[in-house]
Length: 362
Image 1 (cartoon, helix red, strand yellow):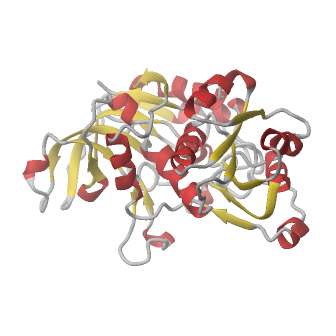
Image 2 (cartoon, rainbow, N blue to C red):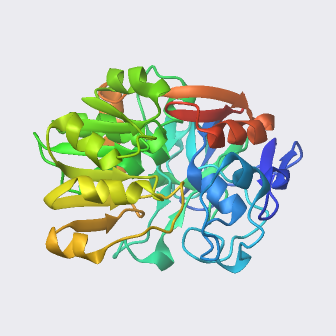
């Protein structure tokens, strides 16, 4: 089959397009999916470059993402701080059709249209890192014509949306839902979202609006119209020098919740914009993992700060229901053929798009 295989940590040259890769065979409890499309996300770039390594202190830019980090340590190159197994087929955001089943899976599933829930969690404590597998990171994913996954993670979906549109959902929307849930966002509250034009950020805008919250989006000026169309109450230019003042000015006061996938210098502005007892949650730091933080902000403002990585069981199924009801909008910014995954990643890292970029296999 055709596949793009990651051969090691580093630059885009580590993405090897192959036409002779073996088709995977579904094991007991698994299904074989013919991939229609697979979306890109930051995990793909972070894993390839070993950005997760604690020795890396810079953010992902077009330059660092294309060339990799010279100081990255391969022994902690995955999101969980463990080594990555190479060769690896990445890609967490699969939409396609079941074409085969392993032992113990009813053959009636063959022909089902599905998207993949990328979190393959263990039984019992779903927060147990030892049993938390991310599709396309600890096992092969969807940058290929075919992939296998646990039957329970292949979620049947009934919609007129294309595979390319559906491939914008799995990672971005489950991550966004996890972020929003961690903050316990309530109707009528005001939330500021950093990185609002990206896959996770634009998903968060929609999910916050569904909860009845007022959304302040942080993005570049060229993306204002798109974010307002999604339901943002206000859009603040990310390059504004006094960003926290601009956020407060946009809503006439402080905000209840901050959602962040950017990190870096924006972090401090978000903390400053929060009200007494405000809540902050982060699932990414594309602008840089290291921040300056005055602990007195946390202590004397009674703030709640949470990280959001492992997504609770059942989250993806709830989102599938919202997609089927037409309550969530796919934001397909661009699509590339599988063989041009490198070009797709360059466009992804350039951050000129709103929503998600996908590769198609058919």
